[in-house]
Amino acid sequence: MDATGWKKLIDDARWLRQDAIATQAMAIAIRSEAQRIREHSPVPAAIASIELEHSAAAP
Image 1 (tube, one colour):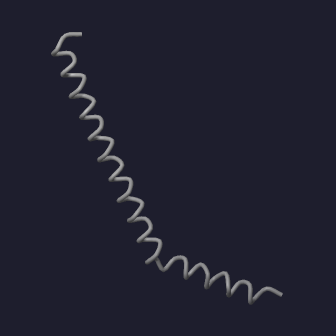
Image 2: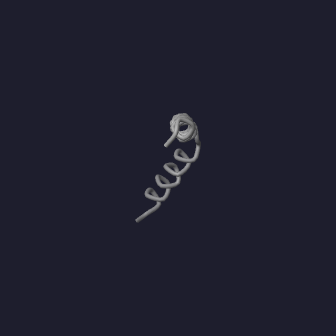
Image 3: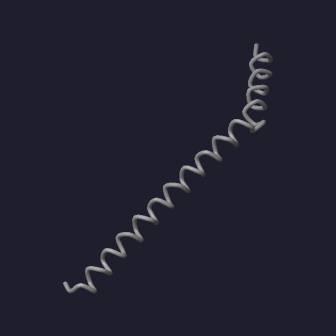
């Protein structure tokens, strides 16, 4: 492989590394947002309330 081929290979590796870092950062941001939504969502409280009512109504 000549110098141009090596340079392209190194440039491609750098690009792939930067892309992997960006992808990892996006995944972290998505997980953080999902956690924030879970913590502030009224749905779990509503489900717990329904389950409590259902269990109280059971014979």
